[in-house]
Image (cartoon, rainbow, N blue to C red; front, top):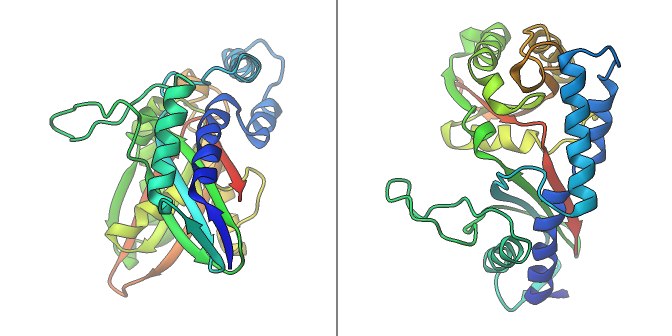
Length: 279
């Protein structure tokens, strides 16, 4: 059994909060750059400004966006790991509190949805744990801004609606809220499970690297089909027209009841702040 001190988790999470908020992943910048045509269009200018913003944020160690988001953590804990000290939930939350305070990241979490009193350290984080083989802990952070999160949708479709019903729901949702989510966006699509789990499916989908293939060939084709349809909407970068409206569509599926077909859409803005560490 491998022992990992909770103080080491806290320290790594503290710095991870800064790293995610200061540095845009390479797959995101590469994808954005691939759409630049140097044709002096509005979309081209915006895409160049997005990349310039990312460069400045990384060099100056300042937040890519003023909304440093809800801190979401996806954790894989090896069955041969023993955490000494605080449990994983307490350790991550202590790391978030320290990271958001030390690096002057905006604190956006309120303790009650109606009272709206700020917790002042961006905790509690949303923490999702899975258990795996091995003696390591893998932690992925996704800092999710309010603008893109507010452009999320969930609908209980029926099996009769089929793929065409899902596609219609996605396109109508992007038409309604895509411009509000600071495009170009990444679309996470969850299909299956139940009301409680389908939203998490959609959020997990956002964690995929742009350019990666869906494990199921039929869904890989559906991702490309949806991406093409979304990019025909002419919403464009920051909602000002042109292409791209979306950088990627990622689908996650799960078993479900014979009478149900839950579908959830979780939209990620172009500032897709995700990082993974392994302890």
